[in-house]
Amino acid sequence: MPQTSLMMTLQFSSSGTPVNVQAKHFLIPGLGRYDHKYSPKLPSKFPKTSIFNSHQIPNPILHQPPVNQSVAAIVFGDGSESRLYPLTKRRSEGAIPIASNYRLIDAVVSNCINSNINKIYALTQFNSTSLNSHLSRAYSGASLGKEGFVEVIAAYQSPEDQGWFQGTADAIRRCLWVLEEYPVAEFLVLPGHHLYKMDYQRVIESHRNRKSDITIVASNGITKRDQDPGVGVLKINTENQVMQYSLKSNKEPVNYAVAETLTRCNDSSYSYIPSMGIYLINRATMVNLLNNHFPKAMDFGTEVIRGALSLGMKVEAYLFEGYWEDMRSIEAFYQANMECIKKLNTGYNFCDRDSPVYTIPRNLPPTVVNDAMITDSVIGDGCILNVSIKFSGGLSNLSKI
Image 1 (cartoon, rainbow, N blue to C red):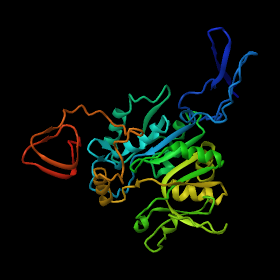
Image 2: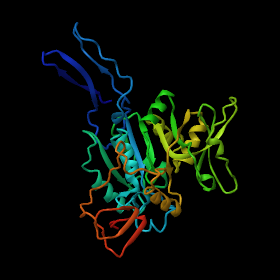
Image 3: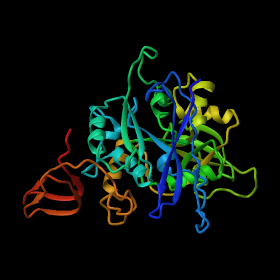
């Protein structure tokens, strides 16, 4: 059994007094970076201690590690059954351009960066060439800190697994040997083609305060998804604890109106609310579910989450009140583009200084406008608009295919 050794870093003040002694990381002799045959359980958070002299006032002990050290994001950029065909004929959903200068996955990655989550894994498979190229070029030099990264994990075959990824749960299970490289406490599972702005730190805070095994983000805003078959539906009680996870079908209509004003008359009242497909799950819980309880599960929502509920795990719902579009159709994608040019900011705001959207610098010349009449439009870089053009209520750019 290999022994572990703890590396300590001491910092001295100008007077020579040691002020901070902080545990950095564990070293396991003989363990390679991607050795998945021996994967020890590393601690999810490290203690922080200090040495004081008689004149110093002790600093408060941190009970939770920083988010950028304790949470890693897993972003899915594509799926085998796209609802945006023919836009996905040559690219995955996450790589579809939006608002002239961006890709859909930029919104999700930007949420992570703005929420101080700097360990981001992108799992890709179908039509992934454009998406892989965009992620590697857009975020390779991003300011993500000393250990921050956006790492693309493309589908692969190995002697143990001859096939491709069979679903979200199968993809995570087969990539655990990479995902467990850092001793994070939770994994944040995200779809890469949804459009919304969210501070994930609030989700993490709620998850930890309630001591949940799994937290599912659900949309509590005004929604039109009651006609959308296949959407995940959460049955929650008055404490926002998830009691049931199901998929809506055409034969089983669900009344989402109760989601806008949750019934809180007594402990037996329940509400139905659409899931956003965002899951925050404890590291040990996810490894245990995927490897031990459900080693054959393919889909994370319908199989793993349902299985966790059947095992009696604590699954909570975090209610999100803001704008959310899951790009369920070509019409929804078109409306999301049109809403970003409206004067009334009811849609997604690409110009928010407090929560910027990051993407790849395109190095195109500025747009040239020659006496063209343009109203309520978004014009990307590299365009030439002449006097013969009348442009109203639209978007224009020169997107690279």
